[in-house]
Image (cartoon, rainbow, N blue to C red; front, side, top):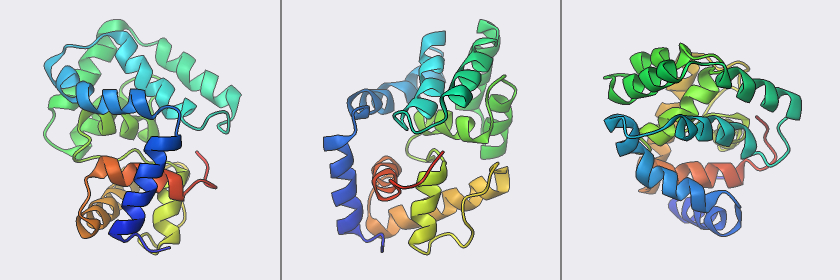
Length: 188
């Protein structure tokens, strides 16, 4: 499937109509960037991002792994979570942002990418098997979804997302929604 503008827009609209988490995601995309950058967020906001990362699969993510990831994140000290998220939101580049988030228990690169999507939805897209798989199937990424994802692989993924978004004349949040719908058969 090509990722032309009509297809991306159609799939993004389908996402908004059919995905049950869309209303809260849309609110988070609108409010979290400023809240995270300004330090106007609570622990529950950060926990929500971690929960969103796992629960957006609506039961398709292995429950034991979801619980383990969420519980590990819960082991972080409140101040550590605040410092890492605030630091990531105000860091200059991708590597520094990711490094700040990876300091937290329960945060791997996929979870970090979820945080980045809500820290700056205009620059970042959450990576997972579905979004990667949609780009791979469309010929935008050469390799299938790696497990785990490295920083360099995430850079490659982001470059593909940015290229496709520019060609389709959509923002990255719209592209994410389209990729999620297109990659429905994909996994975590």
